[in-house]
Amino acid sequence: MKDIQQVSNVNTVEGSERLSLGVKLGYGIGNFAFNLAFQVVALFLIFFYTDVFMISAAFAGAIFFVSKAWDIVFDPMVGYFCDHTKSRWGKKRPYILFGSILLGISMILLFASPNLSETDRIIYGFVTFIAFCSAITVANVPYGSLTADLTLDAHERSSLSGYSMAFALAGTLAAAGATKLLVGSFADETTGFRAMGIIYAVIIVVLLMITFASVKERGLSSGEVKQPLKKDLALVVKNGPFLILTGATTLMMVGISIVGVVVNYYFKYNLQMEWMIPIAFLLLFVTAGIFLPLFVFISKKKSKKFAFNTGLIIFSIALVLLYFFSDKGIEYIIPILFLAGVGMATVYLSPWSMIPDTVEFSQWKTGLRREGILYGCFWVSFKIGAALAGFIAGQCLTLANYIPNIAQSEGTLFMIKLLMTAVPLIFILATIALISFYPINAEMHRKMLDEIKSGA
Image 1 (cartoon, rainbow, N blue to C red):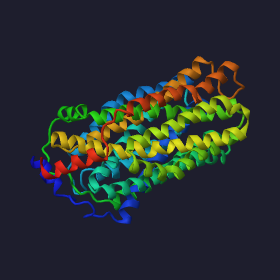
Image 2: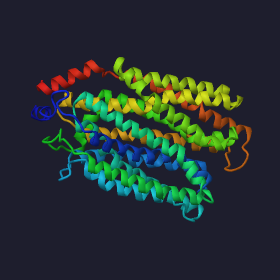
Image 3: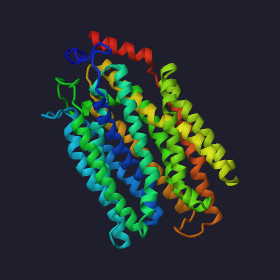
Image 4: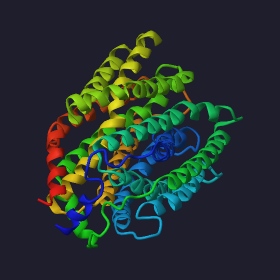
């Protein structure tokens, strides 16, 4: 119980410790950098591989999928070492500092598109994508776990998450809306993607340096005894709410990411409206940003689980409508994308507002607070989801005989339509079913914190 008592001495009274605006902005801006990096890869890398770097769709999908075997091992390790790091900058901030530099370098290499043979292009794709995934893990796992470390005050934590999610949406908007325009401003797509990688890398490094300089760790888990990685992983396996949330988030990310990957193909080939790709992304993500406060309100009035499923149900309805009405013209497409954006708001709020509660659940049950290992494993769910989406899209396109930059056959066009609508719908419905079993609500969370504070 010594560990619990030590943690409970920090910020035990709600409202006793306020985070400054500078801390909230400095922390939040880091999520702009991470989402800029993550969403550029999620939305454009498969398209870049197939239509610019000229890697086959099957190998492009395989690059996404195989790299996750490394992430499954590496991400929890980063969380573990983060939990047990001691430095003058704290446990987590050193990883943000040095990880930002690695992330910038890997972003440049990812889109460098050197002149190589077909086999060497595939090898280059594997190596640089694994390097990118490793670099973003080094910086992002410690960054994410700071949410649970900076304060235990429920209101301040919600406020901090709100700033972070606002910047996350801004980063997503920048990736979705500006990338295609930026690439198109150069003479050819190869040069455009290469320049984009350099420009985004500089932005990412600068913003994460600002985050490093803006936050100070509170040391809520200081003094806890170090134990082997195997025992810390056992804490994860015993955390039922965490496993439910992680499984649901993985399924959700597969569905959402398939849509994100296939948007480029769907508008280019099915609708013959490649010019509308940036507009489609903006409709989705701007709408999500506008409706984010609504889902914050729903979370407070009902529950985080209810808000999560409400958004996913709205998104599911939009996918059904898109399947039946997208070929009837742009006047149908725009309101459907708007509706999908309303549902997508919960994607940026619910998982990240629920994961800190699972940290307290673990501490409540075991007496040990392990933000790093939990966030490391949770981050894997996002990356596995995106990787599975890329793999599924790549394999399905190959089965449908997709050939880049030509008019597609009816069979290929139908496969792209299924990937845009019916396939992601299956994963979203599975997410709704699984997250319904998530047990932590506001009342249970208050009980956990009270018992942690009292040392019960």
